[in-house]
Amino acid sequence: MKNSIVKIFAFVCIAAGCISCGNSEASYEEVTYFTMQGDELKRPTDYRSWVYVGTPLTPNELNNGKAAFPEFHNVYIDPVSYDEYKATGKWRDGTILIKELVSVGGKAAVSGNGYFMGEFIGLEATIKSSKHFANEPGNWAYFSFTTPVNEDLKSSAAPFATNMCNSCHANSAKDDFVFTQHYPVLRAAKNVGATIVPENTSAR
Image (cartoon, rainbow, N blue to C red; front, side, top):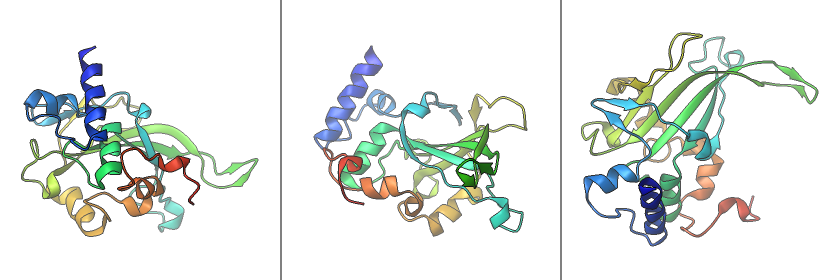
């Protein structure tokens, strides 16, 4: 009950344009959707109920058989950060995005040839936190809970070394280390205002 009340309060604060909702450590932890265990990120839960962002795919067939990320990436963002992005056009301190990795399954269906999802194979996350990652570029850190094939996801994960992910995001991502150029859901949401629901507009 306490968590529900605090998160409702967080949404009210966002609508009013005061995302900070107080300065106590407790309030920061309550309005974030991730938990750190020492230096490791605890695997987030319930993320499929967050805001769905999109599903990019860079298949091997289009990358000389050596795609860096040949699987589907289902991307979700926590709802508090999504609403803050709508209100201000900024990624708040405490943002988390999840990438759920899905293998490429069949390549033919009754609708025609293409790329169709296979099985869940991994889980990754990125978070923005000045509290936990003050020395990382942009305060962003990147994690993977993926284990070898056919093994369960890890319960927690340490951040990747800075040179593993940050430089690519810093050099190529459109908006504060986030590749919004590839996600129309995020482009439509940016700075539209706290009370606007982008998908309900007629603009395309």
